[in-house]
Length: 399
Image (cartoon, rainbow, N blue to C red; front, side):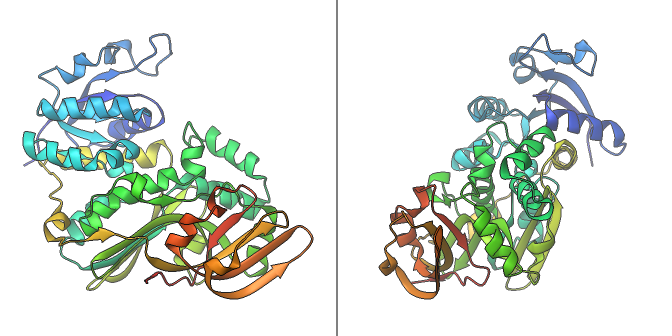
């Protein structure tokens, strides 16, 4: 039986306001906003001032508040809010993917110790209910892979660059104006945002707890006009792909730009949309698509978590109970396109095999297979004059 909830909200930015509007228009959820904690007392608000407070204790220590909604950008402040609320026995909903990814193990233990649920559907792929599906629909499926486009901002930028021939800077500025890009664009552009989401998904898909430092991310910051030209000539688009695959008791996980062709579901995932591919032994191949950025899509995910709490829902982390000696590995093979200028030094012997080479006055490239661990050990990923793109037909396999 569902119950009436009293809500305390931290943050009233893009997501907070998006949540307020979807909550106002939804008649089926029994929930009431008691207080909204914000930082700036001089900022004009679209709601009466009676809703607002500038003291966190007005929510965290308020016995009337059933659910604390954490919707701020600062991951350190978010961590303090969430852990305090859980220790006070309050249910918590957050959309802060970095905070959750950085502290997943501790947050998992706090939920058990204080018997307080923490839900975070809005932290992963906004309007796509991937966490709930991994927890409920795929709870007993033997999943082999979860991958796709996890960041709406970079997908929006790449769509504008490929479809409208806009410059990278123009597309990024537009994404920020629309509220799709993070305050610090490096979180999106360099692949950190997608990595945080991937780390969270690894727990629910494979029962694996990993810190973000263990998962490699390489973004779209080095993509050049030459790379785009190569992609167009071959009928490809470039997407920032988050990849995870389980092979026996090993899990492969990383974020990297990837060439995709028309045969891929990800080819038609454009603008701020996300696309998630799930492969399982029983469910086989399934594809989810939905808006991955913006106030309303993320607000709808937060709303779904609030709705679930009216029925006393909590994550059971079922895959953690099934995981036996599963560990992350970097000992696997991938196929890449490596573009570099004539002034750059590239050791071809790092490749296990080379399929294609090209050399001109300004640019060179190599297409071939390389051990992922060797790619990480190279200086290529830290050189702004070099770019690495995963091939679509890359068959990630253990050494």
